[in-house]
Image (tube, rainbow, N blue to C red; front, side):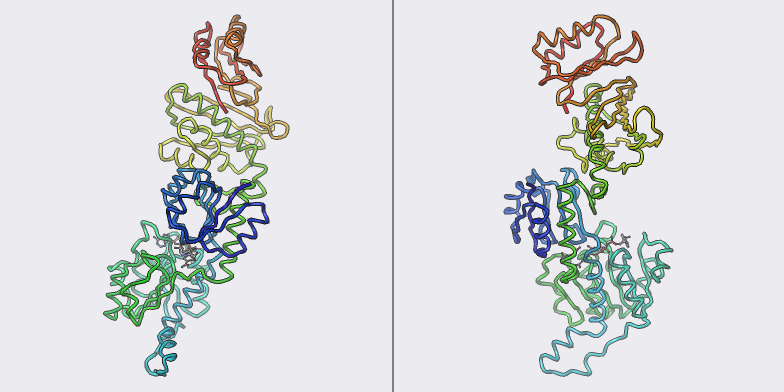
Amino acid sequence: MVKVLISDKLSPAAIAIFKERGVEVDVKTGLTPAELRAIIGGYDGLAIRSATKVTKEVLDVATNLKVIGRAGIGVDNVDVKSATSRGVVVMNTPFGNAITTAEHAIALMFALARQLPEASASTKAGKWEKNRFMGVELTAKTLGLIGCGNIGSIVADRAVGLKMKVLAYDPYLTEARAVQLGVEKAELDTVLAKADFITIHTPLTDATRNILSREAIAKTKKGVRIVNCARGGLLDEVALYDALVSGHVAGAALDVFEVEPATDSPLFALENVIATPHLGAATTEAQENVALQVAEQISDFLLTGSVSNALNMPSVSAEEAPRLRPYMELCRLLGAFAGQLTQAKDGVIKRVLIEYEGAAAALNHRPLTAAALAGLLGPVMEGVNMVSAPVFARDHGIEVAEGSNERVGDYQSLVRISVTSGADTRAVTGTLIGNGKPRLVEIKGIKVEADFAPHMLYVTNKDKPGFIGRFGMLLADAGVNIATFHLGRAAEGEDAICLVSTDGTTPDAVLAQVRALPLVMQATTLTF
Ligand SMILES: NC(=O)C1=CN([C@@H]2O[C@H](COP(=O)(O)OP(=O)(O)OC[C@H]3O[C@@H](n4cnc5c(N)ncnc54)[C@H](O)[C@@H]3O)[C@@H](O)[C@H]2O)C=CC1
Ligand SMILES: O=C(O)CCC(=O)C(=O)O
């Protein structure tokens, strides 16, 4: 039974889903990093919000972990790079809390415009300061959006409904989408110069860190009000403090802080600052949405192999997962065959071409290619899987290409992997037979019909009388039992191949004797 740890406060809806799907689930919140490291090795899945920090140190001891599911959007509390190199899928729930967070940004904008928290506190203190709290209207004001993705576009939609003019700075926003949203696409400097309110909705990346820097804040319109409901670190808190004190910025509403939990900040002493404790996603509806989604996504992945909303792996829908699974296995085995042949020769892979023919041409190729790369790179990288293999290939300059052809030849479906290393290119081709069983049908252009087996011996030789008898006797004398024996040749008297499955490994000394047989060009043991 697969086992999942929920290490942050999640709606009980998540536990119900896991149990319903037959996944064993433990809920342990508030763990220290050391406590998490001590237990994480026992889990296949980890469901988190923002409190759990999934660091490299945690991942290093997460020996069974296959998937991390973030019930929410931002994954800045997960070391995605380390997770990827360890083959752990990282998923989020990109839409479940977007409306709620957009509503929080709008709520903060209203709260700033009418100084609601201060007015409420003063009234409750019995002061009735009617003249102190003079507000501003939102109608006809300019809202500057920085980031117009899921949340930003919902904020834009609501702001347009409030009769605001919306300027959006987002390098990835197309003109067509801007028109559809009723916003004007603008450069950052224009947004800074013209906006009465600015709200940030970008992820925190190297490009967005400090996007509202001291210099940027200096370019804003005097009296601007700023909302940050995205991530701490997107604005310079010290510069913001100075601009609030000088009166250049009329108010700021912050849900997120550079250091969280933020229990102490000079900003808290300012009347014109509203602060909430990272509450953007905190509604019953959003928490139920993200908890349900993350539990479904983690269960689906662990139980069926379907992948949704992963940041480091191509998606595989629940519908296509059963169809893709035998092909993924075929691709992995073909990759492993080609990888072991390459390793036995010159070793350094330069280029991989994966071709899909017949029925395979119509499939979702990204997960299949990832599976082929995982098999191929197995001999060079311990523990490589579909998550880590494409990244490893990219980082090591291995060129990966795909081809497809719907034409059906001798086989309904074919996958061919051609690997170039040094001056050589080696191709292995396979198909699925009967109930989805992988079969090798061609090696280096020579036809063969062979199943994959845990232990194999692959020999290339000259097609001349004398090899097969000597080879069989040698294995028999060494006590290596042959399970299956397959032969193929390019043409009479030319290059031939012999693929044998054995009941156990062939010792290195026996392999050396095979290599020394007359007519043998090369011999390699293979394991699958
Ligand atoms: N306060 C809270 O509780 C919550 C905060 N968030 C945060 O809200 C932020 C936005 O989330 P989503 O809208 O779902 O993300 P998204 O990925 O849908 O949208 C982000 C947008 O930022 C744009 N962008 C990227 N780099 C940019 C740059 N250099 N300059 C301007 N725009 C840039 C992207 O093109 C994209 O359109 C994230 O930081 C997320 O972590 C999300 C949910 C809850
Ligand atoms: O889980 C939370 O409360 C925070 C949500 C959030 O920041 C996100 O989804 O990115």
